[in-house]
Length: 299
Image (tube, helix red, strand yellow):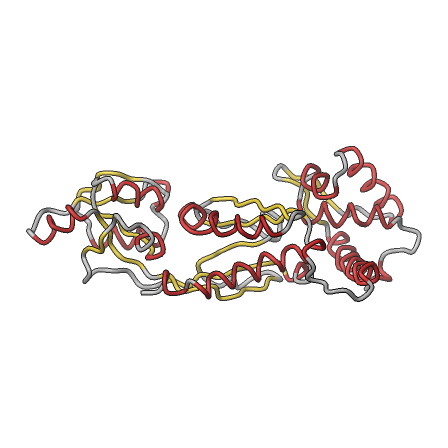
C-alpha cells in the first residue's frame, strides 16, 4: 500500500503525519518527535500540498483524519514498518530503544487509580522513550476520533475497525470496615456508599438502586476508588470490584449473599495501529498483568 503515497513526498513530512494521526494534536506530535508545533504544522502543510489532498481536519477536541487521511495513513504505516526494519538491519524489533512515543489509555477512575497507575509505572521505567497518558472518564471515548489509543471497556464493541481483546472478568462484592461488618451481623440498618446522580446510568449504580431502593446512601461519588476510601473510614458499605476491595486490607467482605453479575472487560485498539510498536508494547503489557492477577478480579 506504500505506493499510495507519491514518491516525491518527503519522508520527514510523512513521519510528522503519522505522529499527528496517532496523537491527535500538534503538541502531542511535536512532543513525540522532539520538534516544535510550527514544524509539525509546516510539514503537514507540505505533505498535503504534495499529495493534493486534505489529510486531517481540526476539531474542537483535536485533529481527525479525513477519508484521504485514512488511506494515506495505511500506506504511511507500511512505509514506517519497512524503514524501521531496514534501520535495525534485522535486529530484534522489541528492543527497548525502538519503543518510543506517547500512548493514551482510557479507563474508569477506579481502574486507573486502583490498579493501572502503580503497574503501568513499571513499564515506563523500562522504556526511556515511552510516555503514557491515562485518561479517566466514565463515558465511552472514541478511538476512531483518536481520543485514546487503548480503551478498557465493559462490553465488546460491535462497530468500527477495532480489535477487542478479552482482558479479564470483573467480579463484585460489598465491602466495609470491620466495625460495619459487625453491625450488619447484629442486624443494623444498612448505610450505603453509592454513585452520584451523574453516574446513575452506570450498570453498577442501576443494580445497586434496584436491590436496595430504600437504603440510606450516606455518601455519593462516581469514583469507586474513592468509595473504597469512604468505606475504610467507616461511612458505610460500598459495592466494589473485587480488585479494589481485596487490595484494601482494611476492608472486609459484607453481604455475601448479594452481588451483581460479573462483567467482561475488553481491551480495545484501532486495527490500523496493531503494528505500532509503542501501542503494541503497552497492549501486551496490559494483557499480561491482567492474566497474572486474574484472581484479584474474579468472583
